[in-house]
Amino acid sequence: MRLMPRSLFGRLAALAALATIAALAFAALAIGAVLEHFVMQGLDQRLDAQVALLATAVSPDGTIDRSRLVSPAPFDRAGSGWGWRIDAPAGSIASADLPRIEQPPPPDLQDHRHRRREEGEPRPLDWRDAKGGARHARSITVRTSAGPVRIAASAPREIVERPLRAAMAPLLGSLTLLGLALGVATLVQLRLGLRPLALLKESLASVRAGRAEAVPGDQPAELQPLADELNALLSENTAALANARSHVANLAHGLKTPLATLALRLDERGSDPDGTMAAEVSRMDRSIRHHLGRARADASGGATRRRTLLEPAVDGVAGALARIHADRAIAFSRSMPAGLALAVDPQDLDELLGNLLDNGWRWAVSRITLSAEPGPAAKARIAIEDDGPGIAAGDRAEALRPGRRLDESGDGHGFGLSIVRELTELHGGTLALEAAPGGGLRAIVTLPMAAPRPDMKI
Image (tube, rainbow, N blue to C red):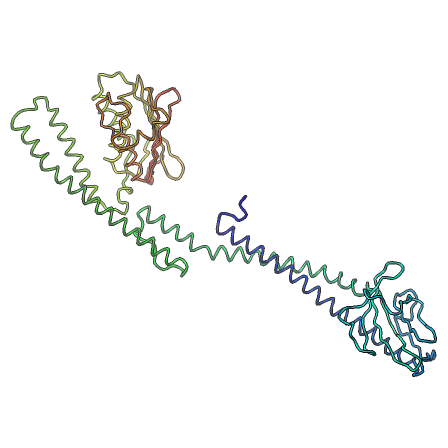
């Protein structure tokens, strides 16, 4: 089970959400503790004032002067929960609302922070009365000649808890709104912060499409090393491609002269009465010229900006193959939208179609069909299928390897499908082999479509 999302946006958003929730929870607890402290401090001050007022009624000999006992509001209201008590050696006196406090108070009712307080200094007491209600008191011990006198004043703990509950509701509401605002701010921050990554992706797409030669060098500090490495890689690939094109050009030039000599000798000696060999030499010469042109083309994607109509190319290749394989009664049919154009070099398209259709004519029993249609991502889907024996699923990947022939009885060289694959990948397309519905082989090629002209509808 993956705990963190796969995307950077999701990971950063999840971490920000956890940090925000933890911070808001801490803030709620801290603010609640501060509010409780101040409310409790106000209550203690009122209780301390009452204790000090009652202490004036205690005489040095331990007696209590009842005439000096004063119970200001709210201690004077019966049933209010506010009360006081004086425990002296001669007896005790208390208001009606103060239950008896054991002498001395149980240790668990004493605040451990105040166990070492000096006499005469108020100390807090907390306990539950007979009705189960929580109470809070302040108590002092006064030394007299007759013995210690203890004075205590108490109030319901609800006096503290009620305003805290009332304050926490709007506080939690405010923190919730703050959390939502922080969440929105985090999303905006992530969108803006990760925008350079999206721009870098767009820059790479422009390089891949041939609209740019390198990634812009003006990048944020964190992405600058990545951009530099990408540009270095692009530069190395460009140099390697230029080197490969140079080798192709040299090879083509090396073959061009012997081929011209061969054509001249055939013409001089009359060794080709039916012109078959001259036609093959001419085809080889066209192929060499084509690769020379490719070698001179710009490596940044100039070929992909060509515009080649598919229908004439299919008709031309199919017509030539029908004449070459005139001894085989193969029915060829095609279906495609009129005006469908591909961003592919014309000779590359002829070579691609020629290899696939030639395989079909070699292996088909009675028919070959070609269908083409526009697909997603501005790609055209071309399917060529025959009713021949097909290729077993386990052998299809092997059939795409250069020079690999699955049937040695034929007169091919095993380079056709590998050339098709290389040409489709060169133009940003794909090649897939699968079984045809009625038996045989289906080759599916995807190639980029050229932008339609304003006066053309596809």
